[in-house]
Image (cartoon, rainbow, N blue to C red; front, top):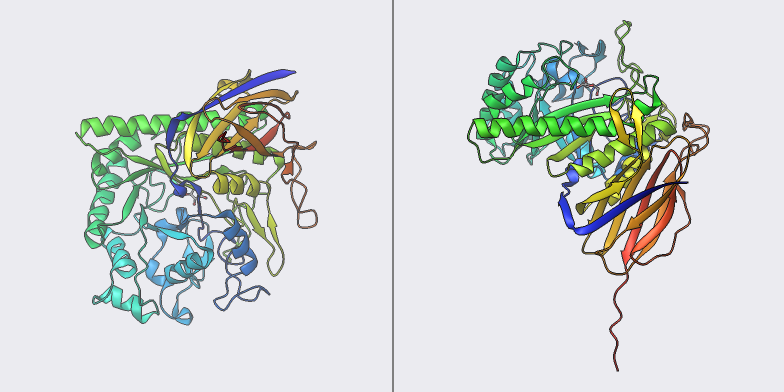
Amino acid sequence: MKTAKCIIDKDYSIAEIDPKLYGSFIEHLGRAVYSGIYEPSHKTADEQGFRQDVMELVDDLAVPVVRYPGGNFVSGYNWTDGIGPVKDRPKRLDYAWLSIESNKIGIDEFVDWCKKVGTEPMAAVNLGTGAPQDAGYMMEYCNHPAGTYWSDLRIKNGHKEPHNIKVWCLGNEMDGPWQTCGLTAEDYGKKAREAAKIMKWIDPSIELVACGSASPWMPTYPEWDRIVLEHTYEQVDYISLHRYYENEGCIEDFLASFADMNDFIKTVAATADYVKAKVRSKKVMKLSFDEWNVWYIKRQTRFPWTEAPAILEDQYSLLDALVFGGMLCTLLNNCDRVRMACLAQLVNVIAPIFTEKDGRVLKQSIYYPFQQVSLYGRGTALKTLTQSEKFSTPLYGEVPTVQTAAIYHKEEGRITLFALNCDMQEDAQFFIDLRSFGSVKMTEHIIMDGPDLFAKNTFDKPDTVIPRSATIVTGNQSFTTILPKLSWNVFHFASIPEVVKTE
Ligand code: AHR
C-alpha cells in the first residue's frame, strides 16, 4: 500500500482565517434569484416571497457574505430599477444573459434576505454602462443615514436604518470581451479609482475590491492586474481573482486544479507586491477570490428572451466534490493573502443548492465539502508538511497526490485536518503527526468517496453522494489511518487535558 505523511505543528501558523473566506454569490442570472431564493408562490415562501426551504440550507452553510447582483449582470444594470414599489419597476433586457429582468428583487429586498439568513451583503457597482457618480448614488442610498435625496429615498422605501454594506466590488471582469462595456486596464483603473474616491468619501468605513483579470487564461493577465493596481493601489483593499475548473477529459488534470489555483494566487500576490514596491506603499493588498467553482455549462445558445431561464444549472458529481475540496484546501493554505472568497454561485446557477420550481430543494455533492470547511475552517490555519507520491498531469506537471489543510481551534483545543487523496488506483496509509499538541485523540473521521466517480444527487435519490463516518483510530500524538483512493477526508482531534497528579 502507498503511504503518505502529514506533520502539523501548532507554531507553524499561516494566519487567522477571515470567515469571509466562505462567502458566496447570488447573481441575477438564470434561476438564482427567481425560483431560487425568491418564489412567492412556493409553499415555503415567507411574507416577502423568499423560499424558506432554501434559506434553511443557506443558513446551514454559515455563509458570512454574499456577493450581489453580479457578475456579468452588473455591467448593464441600473440599480435604481430595483427600488421603490415593485409594481412600478421596469422590465428590462439583460444583455449579459440575454434574459428579461423583472426587477422584482433589488438591493433592499436582497439586504432583507441577507438578514434572514444571517449573512452580510457584498454589493457590486456597475462600472460598465454605469458612471462613478451612479456608484456614489448607490452608496449614498445604501449607507448614508438620512437627510439627502438618496438616503431619504431609502427611508421612504421602507428602510429607516442604512444598509451599512461594508464590502463593495468596483465592477466585474472588466477585461472580458463578453462584458457589457468592457474597458482597457488603463481606462478601468482610472474609472475604478474615481468611483472608489467618491464611495469612500461617502462612507470611509467600506472596503473596496478592484477587478483583477477575469481569469488567468485571459491574454490580459497578469498585466491587467499590475496596471489596475498602479491606478488604484491606495484606494482599494482587495484585488479580485476568478477561476473555474471543469473536467475536460483528463481526470488527472481536473484533480490537480488545486495546484493550478495555488499558482494563480501566488502570481497575483506577487503582482500586487510588485506594485506595492513601485508605488512605495506600506499596505499589503488583500486578495478576494470572489468567483471559484467547478463549472461546465458555459456556452450561450441564443434563446427567446425570457424571465429567469433555466441556464448554467450544472449538476455536480462525486469527482466534482473532490476537486472542489482540493480548491478549498488551496484557499485555506493561502488565507494570509486570500482574505475573502465567494463560491460562485449559491443557488441553481453553478451552485451547491438546487431547486425545483414550485417543488423540492436539493443539496448537490459540493454542498458537503463547502459546509464542512465553512463550519470547521474557523480559527488559525496551520502549515501542513505533507509528503506523498506525485502524479503526472499533462497540464500542470507533477502534482502531490495528497492535498491537505489544517485548522487549530485554540480556545477549544481542537484540530481539524482536511485531506484529499487523488490516487485513482490505491488507498494510502496515512500517518498524521501532531507532535506539538501534547496528548490528543482523534474524535471523528468523515469521508466522501464511492464506487462511482460520476454519481450525482438527484431529487429522487438525494443521498447518493454524501459524507460517511469512518472508524476512528487510536493514538496519542501520532495516528495511522487510511485515506481511501479518490476521497475527501475530514479529521477532528481534541486535546486530552493533562491529569495533575496529587499525592
Ligand atoms: O458566475 C457566473 C459568471 O462567471 C459571472 O457572471 C461572471 O463574473 C463570470 O464570468
